[in-house]
Length: 114
Image (cartoon, rainbow, N blue to C red):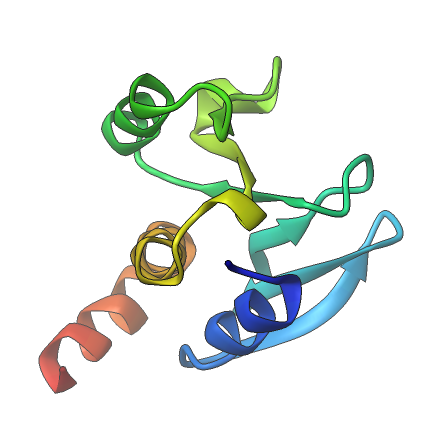
């Protein structure tokens, strides 16, 4: 089972990341831009930014776990009930969110070193 502490630790392992509150909830940022935010409404959910194809695929896979918020969903923001996601899957999701939000020069630099 995935927990917020594990998500936070994983997210902060990416380059140029830091944690700050946003609207009263913890949010992880890369170069000042949010890529993971804990839900204010539900202690078991997070919001991440994904590509539209990945977002659609995840929602299709399990609508109970993945959903798109009414306004922000059209920009790739995706709600995830993280307690129902395997850690290995969450790791891939967090990485995609970081790549989606990070400046291209930073994500390209990371690709070259991994």
